[in-house]
Image 1 (cartoon, each protein chain N blue to C red):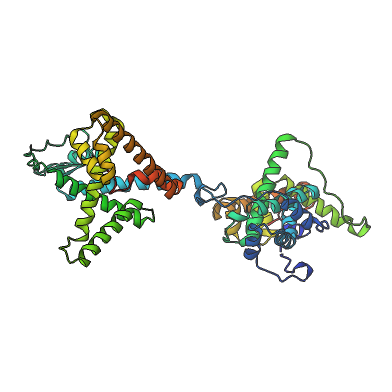
Image 2 (cartoon, rainbow over the protein chains, first blue to last red):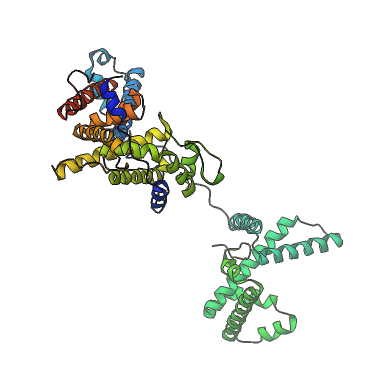
Length: 278
Length: 196
């Protein structure tokens, strides 16, 4: 051992002051701790961390460019990528490609070719009134099915179905020819729509009530009341029809409100079957 | 040297386990770590700075770093001891640079912790001479001597601690020994040619 080493060996530190470790730990534990970074290369403690983000970014950029060049070259020039295309074209080896059918990608300058004018499809034949009603009835049935699936009430549809069933049962019991339940439901719905349309029109403006409507109205009255109604003059008949329609609509609205909960009342108009076709 | 004992009968754990507990905010685990590594940290800091009070400050700051950065600490070569030693060494170098910048005053004598006995006078003179010689060394040379000679750290680990290559560290060590020899000869403690 050299003399220098002997001197160095004699250079011993004093004993550690008592309680230094505990004091240091207690003082440190009072400070907040740093949270672990989700991006370790961004940590300040990692040497060269600032360089890694640039390296990763550069590598990604290079990979994207290389992929684009490869796509151009492999496709034989059919795929044209902006910027990359010019670079590839400047390389003599690849510039000799025969011009082929080119697929332009992400290029704003290329406008899509206009589509050839196609012949307009033949206009559908106009539907008759009954066909329109059948179509509306089918849509209404779908809507009712959706509401039932969603657990929403369908009081009008229920009522019409009950009525249709009763009619079918009655006709079957009497041995009469019986149409299908759907057919009966359709007829009932159409009759309700027509009645409602007439009532709304009557309630809106009694002066526009036609003689046909007066005649129909008289037919739905009980015999005694019908006689009284027919004994009135035309203006009085129309006024009476208007008042009756208004009373009927008001009563119907009240019963709907009473039979439904608040949110269901708001959805009530969208329910099918009892709504008149537009 | 690491103190391999636990306080209060608690089962000793390895440094990695303790640091994971520290990362979860376990102050008791930090105390165990401080108990285990404080002697080593204090020795490094004292030899680097030549001042007990400053060495204590460095120890405290190093333990604080361990607490604050526990979540981002990962076990690498040298383990927790190596990491703490690196932190303490860098803190000492920072302090030396600040001190040199602020003041050019003479290096203070080390506090006399030993009993003032006649038999210790020579030994004390030798220690003071080494302390002066050490403080006269540039920061990196002093750190290289402290780490490799006193702490027994391998050249590779010491090089990593100082952020230099192994060859550069060996060069630092050679120059540090030459500097120490010259300083001790200037103080009349060493004869010419006996430093090698």
